[in-house]
Image (cartoon, rainbow, N blue to C red; front, side, top):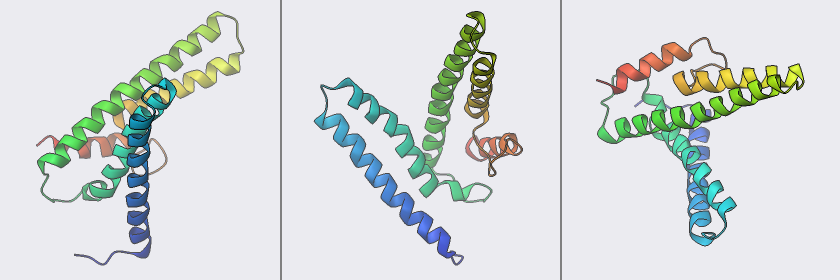
Length: 152
């Protein structure tokens, strides 16, 4: 096993701590606040975020390697893929509807433009996810790399 850099060790501990805290908070909200819909919604929103943290912790480093893909890793990938597509696809549709409604109701052009841009970005991320850099440049390539790894 290769020597890990200091930042990788720190990153792992941050993800472990954050994942455990988020899982506990979600469970606490679900169990202790069953009668409060707002808190239940918060707990439900925390679930995919917690899932993403554990994905980053256990599986993201394997992308690009020849490491064996286990059933749990493949199931996590497919689960995350569909949750991402459904949630961000719905967000994209709502933002697009808001942009159209703002334009039709003679709202500010800037508001319509901002909503439209956010709708496109949410739709892009729903379809392709994020790449390794903070631009859209490698999103499609990384998406295809993940698809090759997990759809064998």
